[in-house]
Image (cartoon, rainbow over all chains, first blue to last red; front, side, top):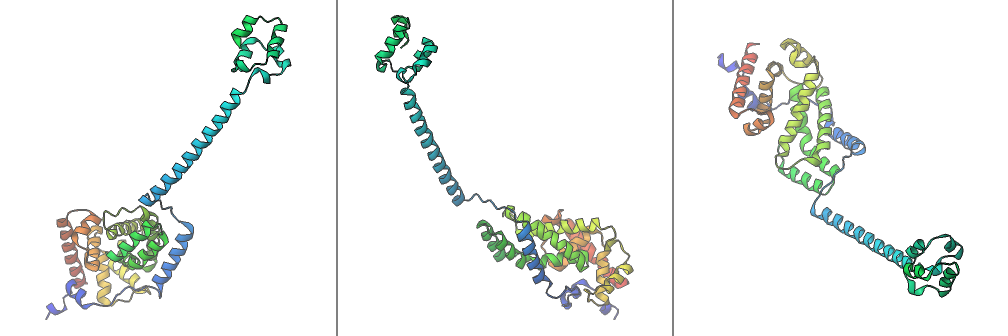
Length: 137
Length: 179
């Protein structure tokens, strides 16, 4: 008789179906809405996934940027070289030529076969020896 | 708590970068389990609600970095447990430091408690257990978690967890029968 009133957790678990703890009406639905609104607005973490698709996009973008960079650089370099090649004594003003020495003339001139004869005459007129002119042109 | 279908959906949404959708599925699948786990630890709704918010924020922040080499449910259990214990330890006047009668009086005054006399005694008995035994008992008795998963969540060997559960059951039955 005493045994029948003894509390057993096993019996309590199998017989008891009533949940003793309660929550406010609609609590879980309301909480879900509040949490999604709050977190979605304020705490959005960044998701960076390096999956195959993203890596492919990065690779294509990087290739395009590299191609554009190389193309622009080569083109600019080509123009720069051509401009350099076009600098001859012909382009140098006489007033300026008077003031600079022959070493500077030679450094600016890389096409001696296009040198204007008149300029050479001018240099001769300035008492500069032909040897020096030839040596430095 | 394990919900394979939900886990698969969450994983797919995360792979597509849809965190809101993944989290919505997560809440549908896990919110109530998390809440009831916390409520068993803390007894009162207000405490459980506060901890639930903290747990959900932690999971929201960490979910995109979750490595799927372990069960999502175990990971969620661990976060829930840590947040619950942090909350209980910060609260110096928490319920588990009250006497059995004080605890029962507080519980009877709670509008969100609807248990009979035996349930009051049972809750007071659970609250009087040492922390480790209380945790093992709640996980095992109310959530029926396997010892293998429990060892992963709480640490320790399966043998020691079984011993803790056995001691807890004995103490609770003795407490209810003698009060």
